[in-house]
Length: 468
Length: 89
Image 1 (spheres, one colour):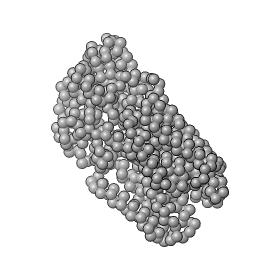
Image 2: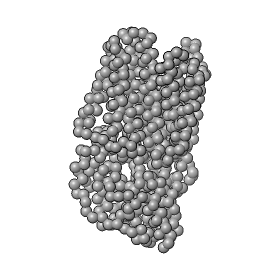
Image 3: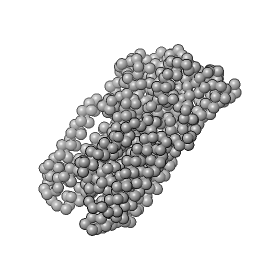
Image 4: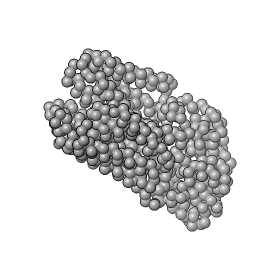
C-alpha cells in the first residue's frame, strides 16, 4: 500500500475511532468523543467516494451512491431525533441491525461477483472464507437485532420452548457445516448452498435472541454490536481496507469487553445470559412462596409520610421511563427539599432497560448529578433512610436475589431497600417484573403499595405534598 | 493484517477498560456508529457495479442506504444521549 491521500484519510479515520472511543468512556469528554469519531467517519467516507481507485479506475454510479447516502442520512437523522428517550435502546438495536444487513449484503454481492466471474471450482478460497464469515455474522446480527428491537418495543413476546438450545446448536452447526462445504468443496450448485446458508443464518439469528428475556436485552444488543463490528472487519479483509478492518475489530473487541462488563454489573455470566433464558418456562416453577397480603397506601398518607421524613430515597425503574415521569419526579424532589427533606436517588446499574438508562433520564429532567447514588453508596445509606419510594422498579429490589438460591435472579446485586424504615412502591399492578418472578418485598409489613401510572401517581403525590 | 488485528483487539480492550457503568449505553451506541464503517465497503461495491447489472445496483443501493442509516442514526442517537449528560455540568 503506497502512501497517498486516501491512505491518509483512512489513517485519520482509524485514529479518530480510537480517540473517540477513548473519550466516550469518560463523562466529561464523551460528547466531543462522539463528534471526533463522526468527523473521522465523514473523512473516510468522502475519501472513499472521491479518491478510491482500483486498477486505475475510479468508482462510478455516483448518482446511486449519493441518492442512498442522502436518503439514509435524512431518514437516520429523523429517526434518531424523533425517538423518545425511553426508546433509545431499541433504536440502537435497529441501527445495529442495519449495519449487520449492510455487511451481509456486501457479502452477497461479492459472492455473486465471484461466481459469475469464473466457474465454481476455481473460486479463490480465501475470499470465499471471508465472504462466508461476513455473511453469517452480518446476517445473525441483523436477524438478532431485529428481534431485540421488536422485543424492546413490545411487539414480540418472549418465546421459549423445550429443547430450544439444542435446536439452536443444531442450526448453528448446520450453518457452519454448509459454509465449510461451500468453501472447501466449492460444489456445482454453489449458489443454492449459499442462499441456504443465508436462510439458516437468519433463522439462527432469530432463535438465538428469541428466548432471551427483556431484562437481558442490553447485553444481547451489546453482543450483537460486537458481531457487526467483526462483520465489518471481514469487509476490511475482503477489500484490504484498513479503516474498515481497524474500525470493525476495534468495535468487535470493545463491544465484547463491554458485554462482559455489563454482565458483571448484573453479576451474571455471559453464558448464563445466553442459555438461561430468563423468565422462560424452565424457571417458572421456582416461585413457590408466593402470595401473602399486601397493603395499599392512600396518596395523602404517602404524602404525609414523605413530607415528615428526614431522608427520602427514590428508586427509579423502567416504570418511570415508560411513564416519562422524570420531570414530575424532579418536581416532587424539589417540593420535598423545600420542606427540609433530604432527597436522593438510588440507581441500580441495570435499572431500566439499559445500563445508565436512569442516569440519562434523570439528567434530562435536570436532577443534579450529586443526588444520584450508585448501588454501593445507596446500600450504605438505606439504614438511615426513612422512606424509600420505588418508582416502577421491581427485580432490582427483589430480596429473592439474596435469599432464594432457586430464584432465577439469585446472585444479582440488588438495592437493599428493606433496610429502610418505610417502603412505598409505585407500580401499575401486582404483575411481576421482567424476570417474571414474584417480589416478596411487596408483601413485607413495612411495604405499602401505591398503584397507578408513575406520572399520574407522582403528579397527585406532588399536589398532596404541596397542600400540606 | 493479522498484526493489525491483534493490535486493534488490544487497543479496543485497553481503551474502554475502565468505563463507569453510567456510560455503558452511550458507549455501546457510539461503538454501534463506528462499526458503520462497513458503509465504505458498500460504497466500493456500489461504485464497482456495472451499469447493466440491475440486481447488483439494487443490492448495492440497499447496502449503502442501510450503512448510512447505521452511521448517521448511530452518531445522532449517541449525541442525543450525551447531550443530557452535558446540560447539568
